[in-house]
Image (tube, rainbow, N blue to C red; front, side, top):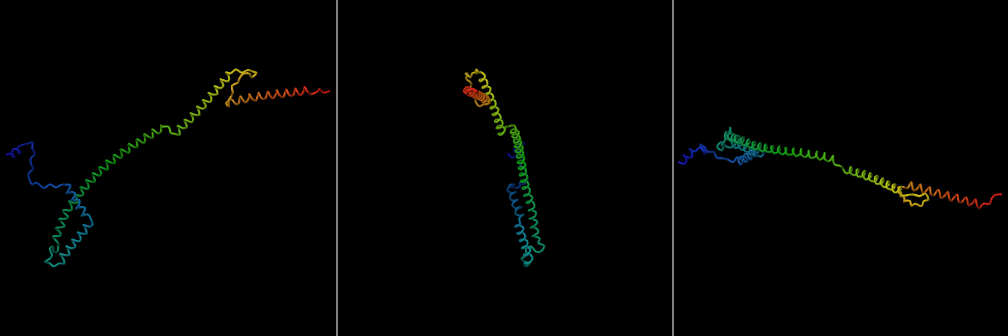
Length: 226
């Protein structure tokens, strides 16, 4: 009754009918097939198979007839080799398919990584270009040093000119008398040419006065010639 009600319900899936085949784990069977294909592709398998076939031929050819289990034409051996080939081919194909799947996954991963590396490389290239542009507008150490040196020289020249101007104004503001009673402002090395000229004029005048006085005294003491 319950089965009949279940069959009548349309919201439930129908149970599959027929022969149910055993389910096999695809991953386990694939690893097993790869192991067999990998073993059949080695030189050791070929050597063992050659020894078995040679022993088979020798036994069924040289031994007495009552001991031969597969006489000439070797029908049973042919059947065994056919079964081996019929199973080996699908197993090898299955192993190749699994290897192709792994290669495809690896290729997709390599492509993804290559895309990421390309994007990173382009980003770094843009950043380096931006840094170069920014560094082109930034003053270097030598440029700053030269500009500071030039500015220091200009400041020294401006300061020197201002001192000369102030000294000249103070010199002109002090009253000077002809007899030298007025106090003159001491002159430093900046006015060396002017002070040196005045000193030479004063020393020259004193020397002329002394020489004139000496000549007059000598003339007064000399007796008149007869």
